[in-house]
Length: 407
Image (cartoon, rainbow, N blue to C red):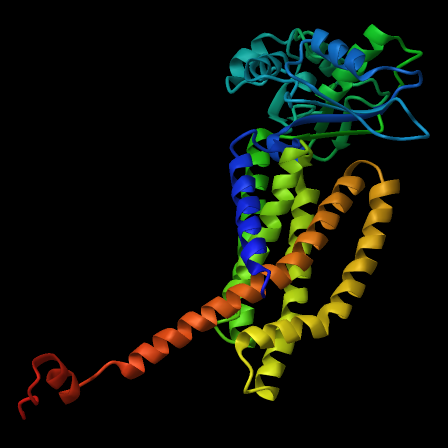
């Protein structure tokens, strides 16, 4: 408690700096939150990161992200992210509908039987959100070769190479699925053309995409999940202990979450769903550590009634310090192992948890406990002021110097 004059201002500075970093330089959102296409690929030959970036830019992708994964076994291991998601624009969709003979005018369709035979005249055409899959339905058994010819007639559209593409997925209602090349497929083909088939593998390790709308929904859900978790923690502690203890845990949880986000922004690490999972983990971890100290404080308050709240906090922190060090130390060792030997998302998750363990342990001692003591002091002062405040006849006498008139 004697050191709180140094640590509390430091915490305020850290939290304020983290808030500022959300606007400048701003968080580096991953594909989960920003939207776009992510391709993870291991090149068969040594390739530099700037070469990969220049090649992707030459393919027409604006401001791509090229991240080299630290992998001893595969030194040319990269994650490539582009903002584009769908390979099919709205205008191209209309062209595809026309090419597939989708029409509401049955008479016009029958009149042009050569271009739109009945077994290649779609009655329904729908596109997947990523634009890499088309679902169509027909009145009669569809002619797959004719459908393939119709799709290829639209410029800029390429079918995914497969023996069963297009294919009938439901013969009862003549449901046909047509697979197109996705942005990931197009990116891999472009890299293969520019860098050579002996450098770019036939298949990437992973291809993922998230639409901009879905990315925004994920960001909102992530923010709400952290806020809801903190609110319910406050309600639990107010019920478990009393109102004096709840604000300390809430402030400590916000402090820990902001420190993790701030460090990720400063280090230009990507903030993804895994990062939010780490933040929620640390919020629970920090609350658990704080509750242990709070429980000892409550126990010592009943055992040492003659001591001040200041001394009770110091005593309680000292009594639980060995437990805190052992718990934090063991958890830290396991997370450090993931951080040192892990790769990609696992390493970033471990980094967030390591930062959170340090911040959570520190905030339980130097943020939550001193704030609880300050709230207790304020509540005691207000209670004392209410007891000293004159009321009724005594208040009237104190104000006028005369006894109050009888009613």
